[in-house]
Image (cartoon, rainbow, N blue to C red; front, side, top):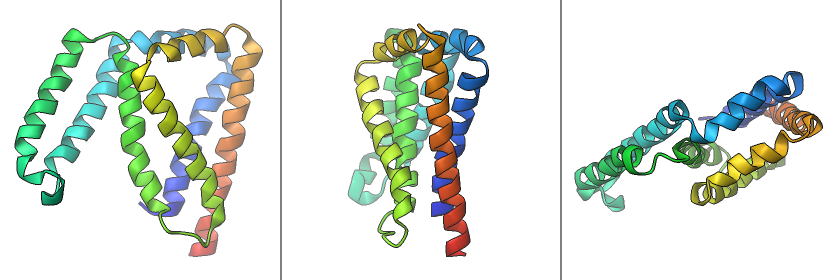
Length: 184
Protein backbone atom coordinates (compact mmCIF):
# COMPACT_ATOMS: atom_id res chain seq x y z
CA UNK A 1 0.00 0.00 0.00
CA UNK A 2 1.41 3.40 -0.87
CA UNK A 3 1.45 6.25 1.61
CA UNK A 4 -1.25 8.34 -0.05
CA UNK A 5 -3.70 5.43 0.09
CA UNK A 6 -2.69 4.64 3.68
CA UNK A 7 -3.56 8.20 4.69
CA UNK A 8 -6.68 8.42 2.52
CA UNK A 9 -8.30 5.21 3.82
CA UNK A 10 -8.56 6.31 7.48
CA UNK A 11 -9.64 9.77 6.34
CA UNK A 12 -12.48 8.38 4.27
CA UNK A 13 -13.47 6.05 7.10
CA UNK A 14 -13.69 9.00 9.50
CA UNK A 15 -15.85 10.86 6.99
CA UNK A 16 -18.15 7.85 6.62
CA UNK A 17 -18.46 7.57 10.41
CA UNK A 18 -18.89 11.31 10.97
CA UNK A 19 -21.60 12.08 8.41
CA UNK A 20 -24.37 9.98 10.02
CA UNK A 21 -23.59 11.40 13.46
CA UNK A 22 -23.90 14.95 12.14
CA UNK A 23 -26.89 14.51 9.84
CA UNK A 24 -29.09 12.03 11.65
CA UNK A 25 -27.89 11.12 15.15
CA UNK A 26 -31.31 9.71 16.08
CA UNK A 27 -31.06 7.11 13.32
CA UNK A 28 -27.58 6.13 14.43
CA UNK A 29 -28.60 5.66 18.06
CA UNK A 30 -30.37 2.35 17.57
CA UNK A 31 -27.70 0.93 15.30
CA UNK A 32 -24.73 1.91 17.43
CA UNK A 33 -26.36 0.96 20.74
CA UNK A 34 -27.17 -2.48 19.38
CA UNK A 35 -23.71 -3.06 17.90
CA UNK A 36 -21.77 -4.26 20.99
CA UNK A 37 -24.04 -7.28 21.47
CA UNK A 38 -25.13 -7.69 17.86
CA UNK A 39 -24.98 -11.25 16.56
CA UNK A 40 -24.72 -10.00 12.99
CA UNK A 41 -21.92 -7.61 14.03
CA UNK A 42 -20.14 -10.50 15.72
CA UNK A 43 -20.34 -12.65 12.60
CA UNK A 44 -19.12 -9.82 10.39
CA UNK A 45 -16.43 -8.26 12.60
CA UNK A 46 -15.19 -11.27 14.54
CA UNK A 47 -15.53 -13.57 11.55
CA UNK A 48 -13.58 -11.18 9.30
CA UNK A 49 -10.96 -10.62 11.98
CA UNK A 50 -10.58 -14.36 12.56
CA UNK A 51 -10.23 -15.06 8.84
CA UNK A 52 -7.66 -12.29 8.41
CA UNK A 53 -5.71 -13.47 11.47
CA UNK A 54 -5.80 -17.11 10.35
CA UNK A 55 -4.59 -16.03 6.91
CA UNK A 56 -1.62 -14.29 8.57
CA UNK A 57 -0.92 -17.38 10.71
CA UNK A 58 -1.06 -19.63 7.66
CA UNK A 59 1.49 -17.41 5.87
CA UNK A 60 4.00 -17.15 8.72
CA UNK A 61 7.62 -17.21 7.72
CA UNK A 62 10.05 -19.79 9.08
CA UNK A 63 11.43 -17.16 11.46
CA UNK A 64 7.96 -16.61 12.96
CA UNK A 65 7.02 -20.17 13.95
CA UNK A 66 6.35 -20.92 10.28
CA UNK A 67 7.27 -24.58 10.69
CA UNK A 68 4.33 -24.86 13.13
CA UNK A 69 1.84 -22.83 11.09
CA UNK A 70 -0.57 -25.76 10.60
CA UNK A 71 -0.74 -26.46 14.34
CA UNK A 72 -1.18 -22.76 15.15
CA UNK A 73 -3.82 -22.44 12.44
CA UNK A 74 -5.81 -25.32 13.91
CA UNK A 75 -5.53 -24.04 17.49
CA UNK A 76 -6.52 -20.47 16.66
CA UNK A 77 -9.22 -21.67 14.26
CA UNK A 78 -10.75 -23.80 17.01
CA UNK A 79 -10.58 -20.88 19.45
CA UNK A 80 -12.30 -18.63 16.91
CA UNK A 81 -15.14 -21.10 16.36
CA UNK A 82 -15.54 -21.84 20.06
CA UNK A 83 -15.69 -18.11 20.87
CA UNK A 84 -19.10 -17.93 19.20
CA UNK A 85 -20.42 -20.65 21.52
CA UNK A 86 -18.73 -19.86 24.83
CA UNK A 87 -18.13 -16.08 24.78
CA UNK A 88 -20.80 -14.55 22.52
CA UNK A 89 -21.21 -11.44 24.69
CA UNK A 90 -19.59 -8.37 23.12
CA UNK A 91 -18.00 -10.49 20.40
CA UNK A 92 -18.73 -7.75 17.84
CA UNK A 93 -16.60 -5.32 19.85
CA UNK A 94 -13.76 -7.79 20.14
CA UNK A 95 -13.97 -8.49 16.42
CA UNK A 96 -13.81 -4.77 15.67
CA UNK A 97 -10.73 -4.55 17.91
CA UNK A 98 -9.11 -7.41 16.00
CA UNK A 99 -9.79 -5.66 12.69
CA UNK A 100 -8.34 -2.38 13.97
CA UNK A 101 -5.17 -4.09 15.18
CA UNK A 102 -4.71 -6.04 11.96
CA UNK A 103 -5.42 -3.00 9.76
CA UNK A 104 -2.94 -0.87 11.67
CA UNK A 105 0.00 -2.91 10.37
CA UNK A 106 -0.21 -2.08 6.65
CA UNK A 107 -1.27 1.50 7.39
CA UNK A 108 1.77 2.13 9.57
CA UNK A 109 4.16 0.23 7.30
CA UNK A 110 3.27 2.56 4.43
CA UNK A 111 4.73 5.52 6.33
CA UNK A 112 7.69 3.73 7.84
CA UNK A 113 10.96 5.71 7.53
CA UNK A 114 9.31 8.49 5.51
CA UNK A 115 10.67 11.53 7.29
CA UNK A 116 10.48 13.91 4.33
CA UNK A 117 6.71 14.33 4.72
CA UNK A 118 5.95 15.22 8.38
CA UNK A 119 2.20 15.54 7.72
CA UNK A 120 2.04 11.74 7.82
CA UNK A 121 2.15 12.11 11.61
CA UNK A 122 -1.55 13.08 11.56
CA UNK A 123 -2.29 9.59 10.26
CA UNK A 124 0.13 7.91 12.64
CA UNK A 125 -1.38 9.68 15.67
CA UNK A 126 -4.83 8.46 14.70
CA UNK A 127 -3.60 4.90 14.15
CA UNK A 128 -1.78 4.75 17.49
CA UNK A 129 -4.82 6.14 19.33
CA UNK A 130 -6.96 3.48 17.62
CA UNK A 131 -4.45 0.78 18.61
CA UNK A 132 -4.62 1.89 22.23
CA UNK A 133 -8.41 1.96 22.17
CA UNK A 134 -8.55 -1.45 20.49
CA UNK A 135 -6.36 -3.01 23.17
CA UNK A 136 -8.41 -1.37 25.92
CA UNK A 137 -11.78 -2.27 24.40
CA UNK A 138 -10.61 -5.79 23.60
CA UNK A 139 -10.00 -6.32 27.31
CA UNK A 140 -13.10 -4.40 28.46
CA UNK A 141 -15.60 -4.48 25.59
CA UNK A 142 -18.54 -3.28 27.69
CA UNK A 143 -16.85 0.14 27.77
CA UNK A 144 -18.00 0.72 24.18
CA UNK A 145 -21.60 0.18 25.29
CA UNK A 146 -21.04 2.64 28.13
CA UNK A 147 -19.51 5.15 25.70
CA UNK A 148 -22.54 4.93 23.42
CA UNK A 149 -24.86 5.48 26.39
CA UNK A 150 -22.85 8.60 27.32
CA UNK A 151 -22.58 9.80 23.69
CA UNK A 152 -26.29 9.61 22.98
CA UNK A 153 -27.44 10.96 26.35
CA UNK A 154 -27.43 14.40 24.68
CA UNK A 155 -27.80 14.92 20.92
CA UNK A 156 -25.17 17.68 21.00
CA UNK A 157 -22.53 15.15 22.04
CA UNK A 158 -23.22 12.92 19.05
CA UNK A 159 -23.15 15.90 16.67
CA UNK A 160 -19.96 17.20 18.27
CA UNK A 161 -18.31 13.82 17.90
CA UNK A 162 -19.51 13.68 14.30
CA UNK A 163 -18.04 17.11 13.55
CA UNK A 164 -14.75 16.08 15.16
CA UNK A 165 -14.61 12.97 12.97
CA UNK A 166 -15.45 15.04 9.88
CA UNK A 167 -12.77 17.64 10.58
CA UNK A 168 -10.07 15.04 11.17
CA UNK A 169 -11.26 13.05 8.16
CA UNK A 170 -11.03 16.12 5.93
CA UNK A 171 -7.58 16.84 7.37
CA UNK A 172 -6.37 13.34 6.54
CA UNK A 173 -7.88 13.46 3.05
CA UNK A 174 -6.20 16.80 2.34
CA UNK A 175 -2.90 15.43 3.63
CA UNK A 176 -3.28 12.37 1.39
CA UNK A 177 -3.97 14.49 -1.67
CA UNK A 178 -1.13 16.89 -0.88
CA UNK A 179 1.24 13.92 -0.56
CA UNK A 180 0.08 12.40 -3.84
CA UNK A 181 0.66 15.70 -5.68
CA UNK A 182 4.10 16.31 -4.13
CA UNK A 183 5.38 12.76 -4.51
CA UNK A 184 4.22 12.09 -8.05
